[in-house]
Each structure stands twice: as C-alpha cells, then as structure tokens.
Length: 285
Image 1: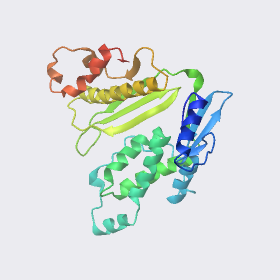
Image 2: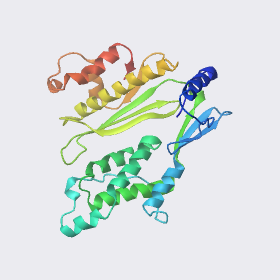
Image 3: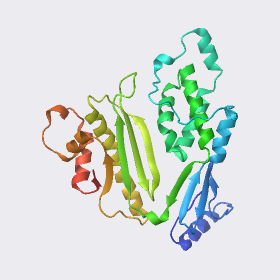
Image 4: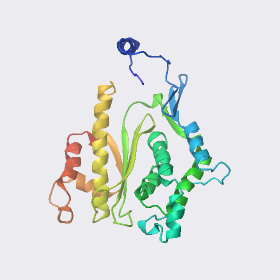
C-alpha cells in the first residue's frame, strides 16, 4: 500500500488508523511496488520509475536472452490483420503450443506501468488473442527483443519543471485494416514526463482524417478534465487552460467553430464536448 501526503502528520495518522484494525509492517519510503522500481534523487529533485527486473523476467520467460536486439517495437508500416491467423491444421496445432496470451499480457503490464514506447505495439497485438498466427507471435517476440536493448528505460519526473499539465493527441485514420477503424493516441505530461498514455481503437469508423482526429481529441480532453480535478484535489490546481497539441487543422477548427458544418454534421454530439471545454478555458488547442 502506498500513502502519499505533503504532511507527515497526515501519513502518520492514516498508518495509525490502519494499524488499529490490521497488523501492518512499515517499509518506509517506497522503493519497489508491484514490479515497479522507484528511485529518488532529492538533490536533483527527480523521481524515477522503471521495471528493469520485470523486463528481464519477460526476456528470460520467452527465451530471448541471447537474441539480437531490435531497434523498434514494430517494423515501420507493418500490418497485422486477422488474415494472418493459422490457415492449416498444422499451423493451428503449432500456435496452440505458443503462449501468445501470456506474452501479450506480460507486455501489457509493462506498457501500462512505465513503458509508453511499446503501447502502440501491444495494442495491436492484443487484437489477436482469440486466434493468433505465426506473424502475430513473431511481432510479439520482436517487442521482447526491443526490450533487450531498452530494459533500463524508465520514466523520470523533474520536480524543477513545475506542475503545469500538457497533452498530446493524435490518430491513425483507418489504421485497423480489418474493419477500418482508426486508432486514437494520447499522452499527458507532468514534470516533463508522461503520466497518462493510451493507444486504442475507436468504437466507430471515421469517414475522414478530421473526424478520426476529432474523436481522438475528445478522449484526450476528457482525460485532461479528470487529471485537472485530480491535481486540484492533491493541491496542484492548474493555472489557466491545459494546452493540447494537435496536428490536424480540420479537427482544431471543428472544436472551435460551433456553426453548421455539412461535412461533419453526422459526428456524434458527445464528441462536441471539446467545444464546451475550450469555451470554459479548461483546455487550449
């Protein structure tokens, strides 16, 4: 269990309350929890989190200790589809012997913890849990081989950079070759490092890149609103609007223009939530 507060008296009070009902062991300042290593540098005012030991366990579990490291989690432009599923009985039998779900699950925990750089690859691999093929398995192993070269990589928060939240939003239009759904990507930064990141397939098919970017932007705005409220609750209330970096001019214009747009009139009203937050100065594009 982690207990956080700016006041030591509050931490002591919480621990005392828990100790009244349960037997506890105070381990002091957090150094390791749920596979995540925590490193403090009080002189430089930085806090780092990483999962080196967990990463090494994945590499060993899937027998890649002596493999050739890869420079990227996925080859640029690689396409993974349902058509890559096993085609013959021999292929099906071969894939049954491969722990694909275990591989993806192991990578997913790492991607959610401290490695946003593998999030896109893991999101793509997770689509084929029901019937993976050899190509899917090879792509997953490639991610593990990428970890060979980057097992020391983690996230470092710099306390000197302040508490101003900033965000990035993007979309890969029609990125899913099976059903042509687009991929939404978001990244929220605090203290110069990621605090929230996500790569997910959109629930509906976007008819244009503007629509795909607008839907991704909507999800990013919702995350920013939640994060702003959380920061306020812990004493780091945001001053001014949260800046969201977006590279699609059409989506930005749509977010700021409440007038009638023939080409985008079909977009679900729930995505226009963005406009409200721009007007209220909670976010700025």
